[in-house]
Length: 336
Image 1 (cartoon, rainbow, N blue to C red):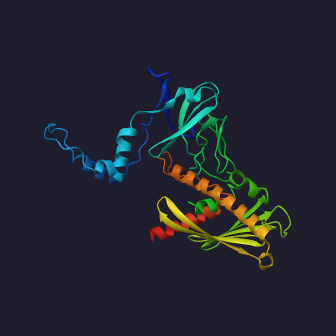
Image 2 (cartoon, one colour):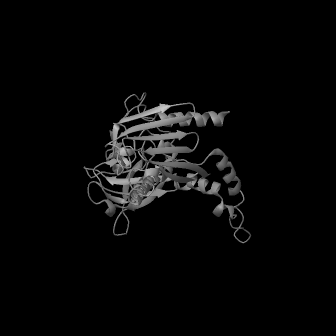
Image 3 (cartoon, rainbow, N blue to C red):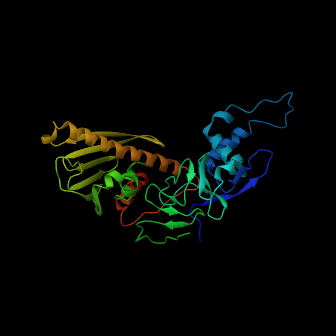
């Protein structure tokens, strides 16, 4: 049985004079520093000379304390090359107890399985890099909040949903989330999912547009924002149109940096309902709830993507066609 939660390493108990043994995890298999960053950082390292007697020596340059390249290099050469203290055994006294943490870009989870064994894993789903759990608590398994992939406490994959058609699969930011063919809806948007017939989801691909369609769960009425059919249109590279019965909203995604984006929402309503304040207020509340759920997902995925445990994921062929289409269009722009 192959581990899919890519283990950092085994965790052992280091007995010390403290009341509780401290858990130590080995990060030696992790690396995050690029060759360019490494070269730049090594130049900074050579600005300090340990051979100069202390009476004449200068302290390390300020770049050691402020330059992002040096920080990445320090993580790679110091913190990712040996055992690091991550917690206390008291935090996971019983079977199914777990706690999470972060060192640099490494998101990790430490847990105790049914047999009392302690293990540490990268807290990143193999599928699309979502964080699996947060904080601490007790779980009999780890279920990804994004698409429902489920892992045993020994790291083995228990369940991967809706992956029929995927080839060469071995069981061992904002736009992507929008384009997964409703894959994440039953796991992340339970309120929205209750008003949709998710089995009816279809995706149509055009030159620079993709349209996802799903039937509503009830007949179109004034009091039902979702209506009889929901449409999600994506216009490459960053504009989205969402139509639910008499309600429509648009999303414009504006990049602000490698880790941040601004999403501008505009709302539209059929003229016959413009004075129905109760319907408008209820619709805005429903929309805000879904957007906040997506923000939580996207921020978790961004953190997971930055983990050195994750490079590339896989597509679920039956549902993630629009996402693959988006990635191919992006590639064409970047390569030409």
